[in-house]
Length: 224
Image (cartoon, rainbow, N blue to C red; front, side):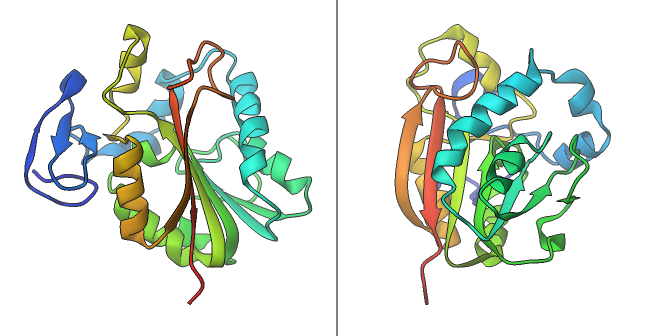
């Protein structure tokens, strides 16, 4: 077994049944090989339900929109109901979604490679932690962006300063990996991005989130 992020074979037991990679620093579950089949089956939508899901996604969209800028072409990976796309579309952007198990039925594709245009901004909002190979996926995001384009990533904060038993729920399947600020920066830089900002916060998501629940990172694809 190797780390699903970087492929390194040295790791040690960590918190809540996860293992800590000695190279890239992510915490990961050992059993992650069948994650795509799990989503494609529809089991995720039937079992994992957020209370007031639409309100939850709307709060998150209203928070994330400030980091998107003014792209001509925008892609939201893990778009679900498409609420963030709706917000960005108000700016005049051409919007596309990517989701292996979408709720929204507009311009949504199952693969990023199927999106017909290069993007100026791509978001992965609570999506990257579900990926069986996050670094490989980020490299695909990098290739899909125009030079100077921006990636906005938000994940649960997998730092070691876990202060609340309620947050234990973030450390379970189907979250394949859990990032802290250092391991997320490592993955972004390994994919080719310049890390512009890293923010730990508790805004826009669950109503009872504390200020350290979420980790938001902004990266830029450099010009040649």
